[in-house]
Image (cartoon, rainbow, N blue to C red):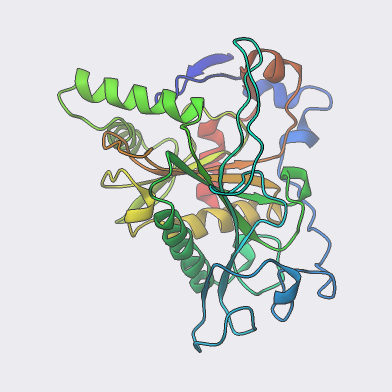
Length: 329
């Protein structure tokens, strides 16, 4: 029977209707059968080692051999986005006019690209485990570098179907001067829960209950837990969270190993790394009643009229079934 499920962290509603995957035309859109992407052409790859002159000058890099900036020899490299969505503070940006109906402001902040490795691959799952560990540490370092921003959002888009304009695996960092509405709702729910429960952490209690029940657990180790969330918006959506609550991803040290395992499980189940969006949810500036997490959203189905008109998602693979399949891998 279809259910409406409410995400405890955001309040977002999802219709979970696993039977719809059996409708005519439903199965191919949701069942694992991904094709491998086309190999990256090394001659046209601006993120390839040796092509440092094809990007803006780097702002940060891991260089085991202590080489000169903007030369080969790096393992993870950070550059300003060549086509930034945000203009740095201090740049000359014309102040926009506004009134009570049509309000606009200059989009200020930082927009960086973090090249996850010199290897010419499309997905983090295709990298060696130690390379993913290094990339995650650089994510944290760059988030700390923008700790004064109202909110720092780190995302990964893999493959063109999920919005990646360049195939080579990379992350993007947005340092924002405001807290986005979705994040603000989660901040308020976490704070209200702490007040109502005499200081309990919302995500900690969610994870504890998920571990007790076990039905949506995909993998677990001593540091973190990987689950198919109760109100998953998309088929085979995953969430990684620490076993011990910590407000900020950028000041924690755990989770990279289990993140890599989760991405590898998805790739093995589907025959190839699927198009996906991934993001780090960390505490907004000055907030303590929070716990970081990483959301992984494979793009196996399309957002259609229901999602776009109501914000209500329709998921045709029950999270319990998704978790079971991924546990078996």
